[in-house]
Length: 497
Image (cartoon, rainbow, N blue to C red; front, side, top):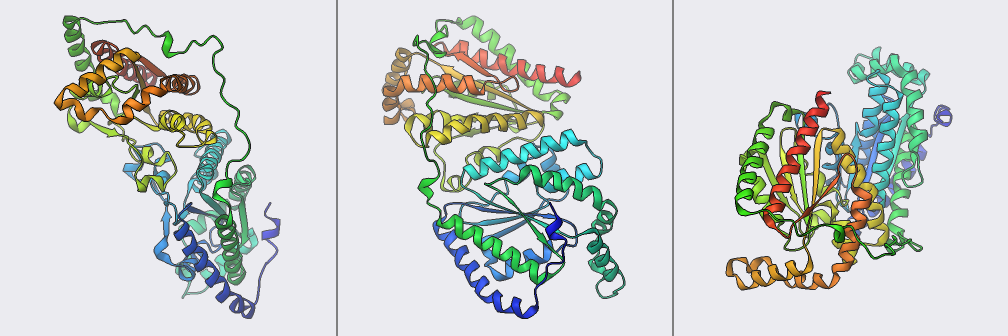
């Protein structure tokens, strides 16, 4: 795989000087067109052998282009803030918005390669990391991102020659870093595992570009041309031509029965039992969140449900049991301009709690397969692939110790109508009812189908859905609290084993 990057590619200075002005002009024009269109972000991943010119090339690109529209980020050792969250969190929060370029050193490939080269983990873990990188890049590209991946290469002989020349030169010996010396001893392992990673992750939507780094003139022109050609091709691409062909519809039950229709919404809890059980479950939750075992976990609760199903009331009963410093409530509404400039899951990744903390999502990432699907705010291709992306997202959370508890609060149409009318007649509740709420009643059956598909495709062992019979608010609130407590106790018991 690296043979063609070990043959001594080079060009003379005159050729370089003759080509650079036009290349710089074209790169700047493409960069400003990227900003003007603001259709997609550009993510440039920098990897490869130490001493192959990674830093020098990126520095040069900053000189050739407008550095105000380029974010250069290095992911070295994880900070305490990053260690307290899932591994991908540090990358998600650093993603450039549409119209900008992000250059990532020490990215997800660097982490997996260094861990395998130094024996921190075995091949099986490396393969899992490779699969995770593929899923992440596929999702980012499906969301419109342009990913350009560079591997800067030197042969073993070229690396040793560089180190020797720098070591013998008092004026430039400072350029040799500890990582250079370290990699000179692990070169064979690094290249072997690097080849494995490149072979598995070079895809049509995010291919690898291998650049020989011996000659700075060749290296700079090669990277500049690849970057320019990639940008021009993406800018010229028809944004409306992303999803072509027909999308197979999801089937409906031929007997017209639905998951929500099978719920027993007649269950009730009288006032005395409610008050007794509510206090008991609230005290139980407060104790669990103060338990020292919570230091290994975070808790995420997702609240979805029919309009007027009582999500707000259930959330308030959960919060009433806790110290406000322990939890955070994140209400999800229509995305802001900042959020629309990022991949769909970005606005949820940024709110993932650290270990020991609890985040409540009032509406969530399931909006894509619910309201966006039913209202036609995204294409069928988008919401169909969202099921897999959401499962992958929740699996990453679970692997990092986050306990994910998901609630759908269900009521029947008559109960919803009664609550709507009550809201309209009660002055301090009128803000809760909108024209959209009334309009959504006309799409009741579409939402029933969407919820059934959502549960079928995203209720997993690691993050199951809990369907809450919410015609009776007392029953619903106690069930929510009890489910949270049982989920935490199960996570504590599992970790102990």
